[in-house]
Image (tube, rainbow, N blue to C red):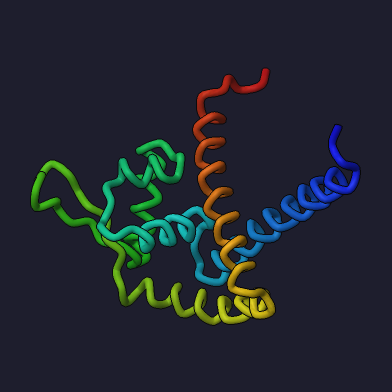
Length: 159
């Protein structure tokens, strides 16, 4: 039997997690609106700039869960807006790499940096050990999210 105090904490954590995810989704929408982009485009830029090397459209599709056709349209939008370029892969000329345009991405980065300074104050009163726990939690949540995304993609759709 689960300890009642722990069960209440799980319930509270579940409720706060739902609130946090909803708030983050709405925040992402506000950032996208501010930049004149689609929310998926903002997330794609975030993923692209987190990678050490340029990605193919197929890799972007895999990371975002979009079909390759939808990922192509996403890259088309980002290219038209000047956020990415397509360049031939030097090792395999059949492939095209999508590369962020640093000067244009700096616009997004400046906004994130400005907003991020405020977000950082949330953690100012945490000890290093607490920050390590939070970081470990975020990594584990990210890994679990990826696993659950794959699981959802393979599940039959409800009737």
